[in-house]
Image: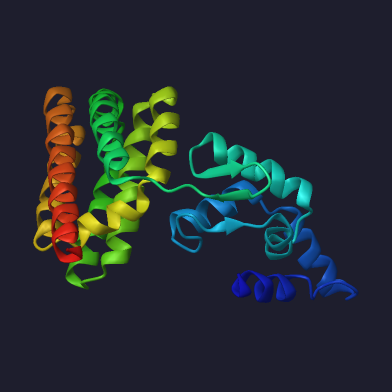
Length: 242
């Protein structure tokens, strides 16, 4: 946790300064501990099973321990953190089987959302979807897999927004946070990224055409292929571990 301590020391350096210090303090008061910790877990800054020490997190974020405790409680409800008596909090480990089950649930919910997005999309929404799709193509041209993965999430989030289905979107947001590390694995699987862009193109074109049936099927097919790729990736990993 040395990185946390070092970062925390840098973040506390504003104390005692005049105008500049006041601005930095104001910025820290706007920090959302829950969002920052969620992002740190999703991006792998904190690894599965890693302990999350309240005092160190408070220094890192520049907030008090009460806010950190509240944030950890929220993340535990989201399934990202687990608390143990006398041992504190740690990043929850998502098993391979659980990741596959989450993908099954995602398939059902995202297919529903794609259907509704096709029925609700405005011209501005369609323009935005095509812009994101182009950013995915640009990332492939540059062989920038990290950007591709990030924009992939942006595209799915935009479809959720267009659908207007608040309940499904809320559930999906929590589920997606839990399996981010598995998603990188599927993108890196040989040949998968080119299959992925083809599938996303079909989803976007179906939504832009207002074809609800086609959008639902395209999304279901896409996530079926994601699940299949993850199964292959996990199987290959298991073989190499023997």
